[in-house]
Image (cartoon, rainbow, N blue to C red; front, side, top):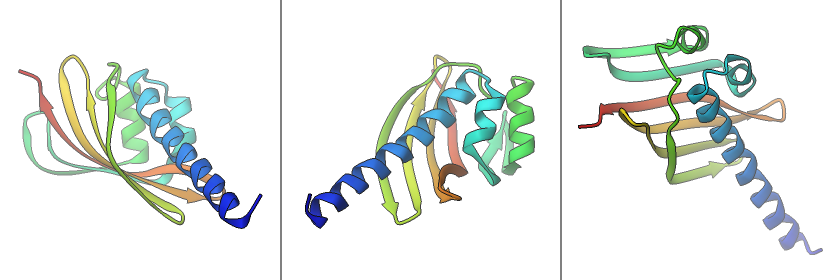
Length: 133
């Protein structure tokens, strides 16, 4: 195999690993699987959103609070379709633009995924959430 072919193969593998981290993050939240979420969320994870259940303002939610919201079903628990709009991967960081849709809500999110200690993990989620009409 040429070095060009090796580079392409490595890039395809990287893309698959990033998408796997993204899908694990979304599906674990949808299924309220806190143990699985803990494996894919970085310790420095932050969820930043404007508004929180009808209350205006900027909300920053760290890993532990996010997992608590999943545990008590404030977040998650509904299956969502996943539509990847755009993805950018640079070395050990990736930004994914996705639209997630449940029967009740639509999420337009930017999800930041990093490679740390040889593992792709979600470090940031920046959702815009709207109710379906």
